[in-house]
Length: 69
Image (cartoon, rainbow, N blue to C red; front, side, top):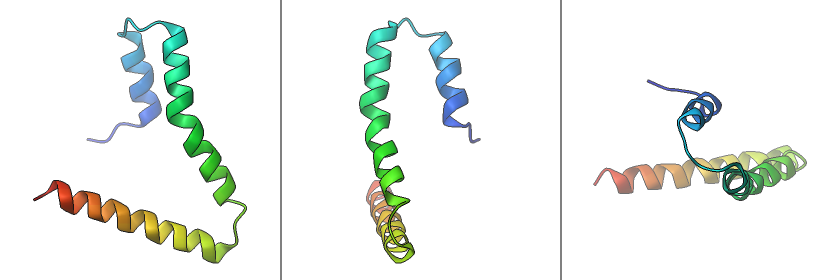
């Protein structure tokens, strides 16, 4: 079963005892770098975007294969 990350975050947040400030900074550290990378990638020429996608898929394949040994 697949659950969207936002829904999962909201539901788990309802049952968490974590304070707002640490949650905010942890989210900032965990999400902001990817947001900047994706925003920058959108400005690249199409060929570079496809190369980056291919590289990302290759890395995900390597991780998948390594975890299934």
